[in-house]
Length: 470
Image (cartoon, rainbow, N blue to C red; front, side, top):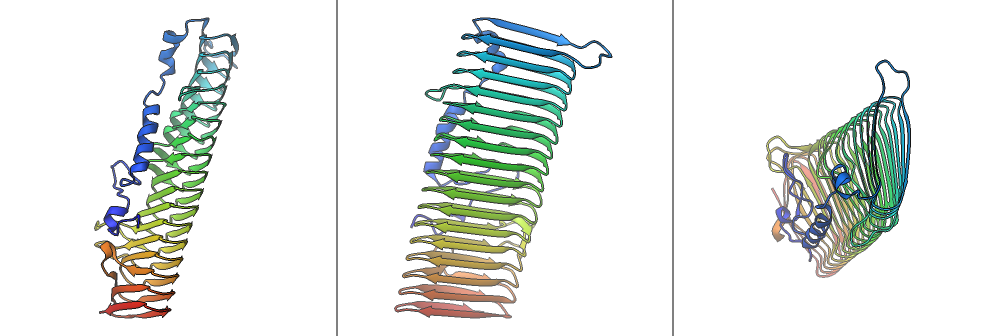
């Protein structure tokens, strides 16, 4: 069996102020992460590359509107050839800047301070770089890059925006593209990025503000979405990846009413997301082989949905604390792992009124459910269905007024506890129902409940059930 029976070993360790690690024990995941970090370690500094690498034609433009001017400047710059550079700086009102470069290894740097600015950069060629810096209100940034890439080298785009009502749209195609949007500060921001081809990466570091809408679409086999620290309210994040060895990683974003939807199709996909906030909703849909999904939350009224289709999929759900959570895990295939850990051993962390549903279809699947803290977590509804052979279910549940319904269909399935020990369910008013259909099945555990009911049904041969009720 792929999963160690220790709940501490298999569950994701998530702590406030600490870097999140979704699969610390997954060596293949770490190898892929290191491989990608080697590529991202050379993140470009486009403004500094301007003077160093632009050895062809160079255009340096600086415009500033006069005091009290109504409506500002209109700029159109076009270059054809290789290793050219444009540095355009426009300060004023209602400015419109458009840059177009055709060739290889061109650099475009555009900056604007003022209101109602529009910056458009269009680059056609290989190994081009674009950087847009805007401080002001009602800004619009659009970057289009096309060209082939090789050995991880391709086009790169960085947007640094500070202000209100910003809208950023980036589209890259053919080859090894980057999209490194960095540090957006403001309200009502909209960011849309679309990439096609191979060697794509999107980072989106430090987006701070309110009402952000982020839409990312990637197609290729080396796609990476890495979102580091989004802080704000009413954020919507939608990620769609197609291809092989895709990743979508968050490493904490803080806010309220966040909506995250991730869809991955292909092989060797990894989806990791963390959030600290209230009213969050997660949806992860993965189709393929060797997929991994982790969702972690600190907050209230969170909803988790994970759908995985294929073989050797893993889904780890860690909810530190919160009430009225809905957790749904659906896995189809063999050797799948589902870990649902509500809260950790901390006096301040509890989980009440959660609705947990786990469905696994296949052989040698493993489901782990841990609802256990120093303070009791109460009113949990748990429905688990496993269909196949050699499946395992580990339960450690404490608190009161839990309703637990377990159905296992197949041969040599077992219901136990952590480390292969007996299942432990404790609290008042616990209702437990277990149904096993097949041969050689095992139920072993203890139920500590002054008031409650236990119903166990086994249909088949060589089955064993041992329950100690206290």
